[in-house]
Length: 328
Image 1 (cartoon, rainbow, N blue to C red):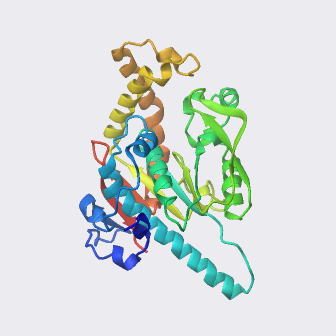
Image 2: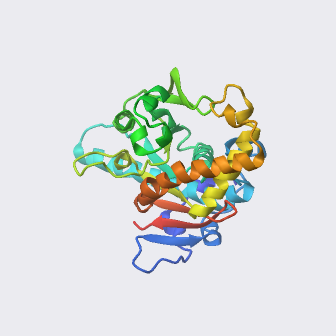
Image 3: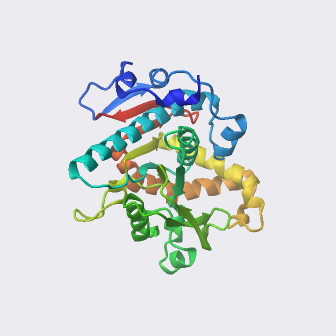
């Protein structure tokens, strides 16, 4: 049985397993076991090297997480892609003219250190193994942060990651071009080492089957009632969630791992932290979390969770324990 079997099913099949949520909520809640049972068991499509490559610093992604959480999610997303293509065909026939289908766009949102980058990369790997969607592109919204010099001019360095620190017009224009079927669209490239855009470097997106857009606040509503939000152009939105104290702990532990690793490079923007004692590094991580990341999470990111199509709820061990799927 090949891995492509994972994608040859129907939404009715996925609905066979009972799930909680008959309480007026727009979401149906699945515990991890019930969610895992939705997908037929198939050989693990990712090698140990693949998993290590897509796993972010501090995350706990392993083979069981891929099989029990992400394979069913990839299967479900493939059904949504198939449904979108079928709807496009019907619409084209109704209108009586030829129009190419546009990329299926998935938004992945959540806090710093919650694991949204890992989620995005593992989904890219799984979805690209579906013969129906071999071309899956991934763009992080970090590239649309204002350049560091501009952030300094606007006194926004300490609010980097807040909505006002992004070039939202450029991001909206990028996604609009993707959904308009433009053949080749470019996105800025960001360096976590220099903590800034890479001057003159861009990532070219050429009409993929699926585009995954990952960022802190990509599910945000429009700024005004008459405006268009990036999330309005998504076909599916995923929010990676966890208790705020757990995320704070993960952030602190990740900071220490980076301090012992990437921050050691003289080229790192955060090289000044490289020689801190562990107690000093923990104190600095707690300060950054409390003054920047937690307020951004509470005021800007967390309120977008109800706008998601699906919520991955993580437990204290950084593993997904529950999945909430919006009813259709």
